[in-house]
Image (tube, rainbow, N blue to C red):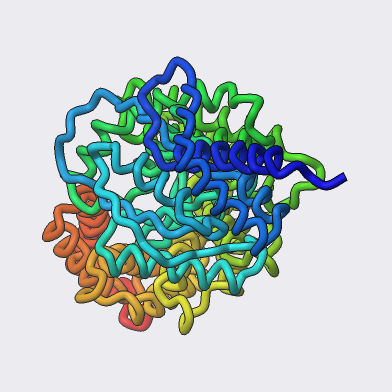
Length: 528
């Protein structure tokens, strides 16, 4: 039986009204706290006929099936008006770049991010038309290339942060990038931290993204640091309930992401809140990471667990730095770093593996300083030297110099404990190699730190070799380090350098006095 033309016309009119309603809802900003969604008003007869004709043309050109697919393709809902954190817009604004998203053909998803972040007084948002896409974290070449490009984008725009990623049927998968690549600090976001959010960014996900941006931005000036100190506590408190009990509507990956990201947020907050609250927020961070770890499935790659071990180790290390009894915390951190190294494949994730080895080596060194367990230093040197398989003097000179300086510090203490001059000479050689990369002009504070280690190693070599004539060189190195530290207002390092310099001068004075008091013939048996 042939279709009745009137029935077909009515069907097309109905679809036209549905189409207009869907497109109108996507383009209109949502009202704050709507009680219910109002039904779309009926179309006038002439407008309905025109729209029906348009729908009929589309159906004939591309097929009814394609039209229906387009109708029901997931679109980000219009952003609800975020509940603003009651903080005055004081201090400098942070410049946030929002890149175009892979999979976001019409740009609505990126526009929603832009609107949500622009609603925050602390942010000045700028759209970037370029797409940055990362398909696999275990592809070293792709990770390195995308990371480099995102850092360049932030630097070129003189911005503080870049939000980038993709949008799919499940929602957003975002990452945050800054101009630097310090992936060893606690709560480092970078390419490995995914912020997975549903397509409909309600109050909770919007607040999580805001807090994550605050936690990830770099703070180049004291004014920026003050802004973070002022804004971060309220932002962190505002998303704590979301991380504690993610909505069941979220996928398991989104729930895990919320908890992991809150771990980063809580870690940064622990560093800016009053001292009496610091330990509480560090513990909240560790708990959030543990909760994220429990949501890992057996089918997830092992490096996902390795990354979480790495985050927990970083928090424990940061907590140890602020503790009066750091040894137990360092022991816990070392266990986490060892697990991170075990789960992160060097061949597939060389940078993550190497940075975990560095943190393991440093934690072992710090624990030895507290306990005097010499075997820890041997493991520390092994961990640090292993990273030289990834960091090279030619390709990554700054990172190579940093690792070599760490090795020099460990060898200095190791040689002193063993009273082994050969180990101390290795420390001195390492310092000289580092000073070929670090110069006083380019990186004065790093240069001074190496000079301080060099002076200390020379002092110990002289002491353990019965006066081999290294005190003059040691004094010169330490005096130069002290001068730079004082010039740059580095009070802590300056105090250490001054103390070391005092030891050198005291020993030199003692030896001069001994040479005057003791006649030379007492050391010459033939003169008796």
